Amino acid sequence: MDVIVATRRERDAPRSGDLLDLALNTADRARGKRLSDQNIRNQILTFMVAGQETSAGVMAFALYFLSTYSDVVERIRVHATGNRP
Image (cartoon, rainbow, N blue to C red):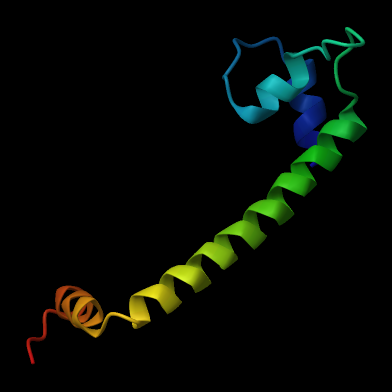
């Protein structure tokens, strides 16, 4: 991950507009300084862990909620498998 951050910081290329680009090129309004490479690495790790946790929670809730509607579950099963009862 450090190599990716360092490579993106060093390369003289047009901005991509992605999250890493914003982290590399946006200054803190209060201090007027950009984030250090170490801080960017820590932020990326936080996003990866938090994103995984959020996605897992949403999937679990969605599957539970769907399971309370047997007619919807049956329609999903038919659509997914093509098998009619």
